[in-house]
Length: 356
Image (cartoon, rainbow, N blue to C red; front, side, top):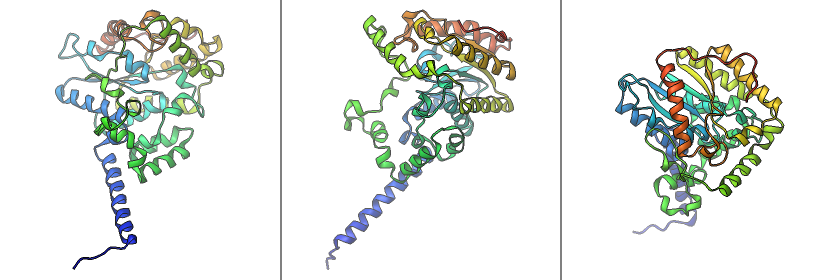
């Protein structure tokens, strides 16, 4: 005998299956499948785990930072340096918009995964120290991309913590909607038009380095990109101030490394001459005083590499092309990596000196 379901029963069954799907997705996001919520982090983590499994006994050096370091430091030129057996396994964990808050969060995630670095390079993007509502790192911090265990760190430092926390909760209640582009980009990218795909991470190499797709840019392309960068950072130059959230996150990261026995180095990535000229003298002095103070307080080196690469090594004045990344990485290897990882002291910055 056939049973005829009423429209209400069909709706109830459909709603039930929909809720079950949301629950399953939420559980998967928390239990081993971060690519369902954050492809950038998942792709970089997968490569780090794979490299660690290939070389389980080599000491680990992780580089944290923004897209500057993500595109600018090439671990492939560092990982096979002699002496190979004793040299560190270097991995690039730079993220788009990654400032002090994201760096603190990333260290928390690494330690939770059991991936404790022996050395940690922490990039200091000067403009991401200027952390106020609507600033660059604040815009890139997306609560819905975080795992449950990340919220405690995130909540302490995000300016828009409550609103982003509500976004996280909403995303967990309906993950198929909130993360639809991420899920489809990872599982079925052809179902999306190219402009909607989150597939920029397919260019990552095995060491986490993301190469700019062009080997060179024309003068017109460079000028247009540099102008866009100026508009993006304009308020940081004219109204610069080191935010307490950024400073607190960075100090907590350094304190965590000290207690865990992780050697730390602060790094300011290369910038083109025009980009450097946009910093007013007062901003340059404030940056230098702050980073010098941190270096001396924690007894850690600060490497100011802003002038290490000529202008033709950039595609927008502060992100490196392949050749620029090669020049920077080779100098970093000679002057920083080899002496630092061999236990030789790197000089601390002078107490009073303006940035060039």
